[in-house]
Image 1: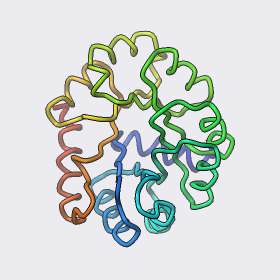
Image 2: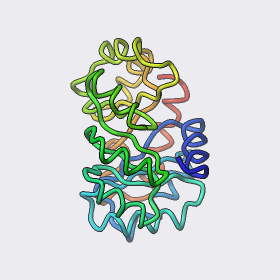
Image 3: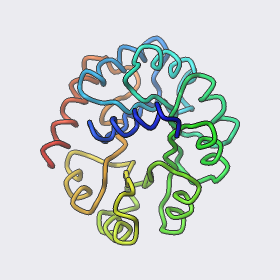
Length: 212
């Protein structure tokens, strides 16, 4: 990773290893939502590329939130990685493992979090240069499976379940070895005000820090 990207990623994970997934956010509301997240202690923000004008939202967030690491989710091709980079995004998150996507992101100095489900995918993603593993969809990867996967991975590997994570199952996944999580609809939904997102963000941060 680029030195500055590495710093922001490491500091973001250390501060609060939760990635805000703003699926459906619009450019005109992105900055207010982003500021509410940063005020609640969040530093890792992704705008899925199937959101309205996602590159505009990413560019606006990058400019407004210099201390956050902003990037895109649902990044499926190397060309999309380049588009995100051109918009100022420095983090790439995907629902799957595509070696070309990971290598393109790594080559551009970006943090890449590919989606994996099996040990084979996990090790291939790490070999390609993944900064962390997105376990997706977590609805199909129960805590017991996370524990089994964690047992064979380097203990320094960041393992982040995404999909179906709730305040009710957060503790079970953490006990199993999850390093952090990607949080979507329980944090942000299209049309939700920045104030409500801020309240949700503070609730999630408090739950994570308390271990419950």
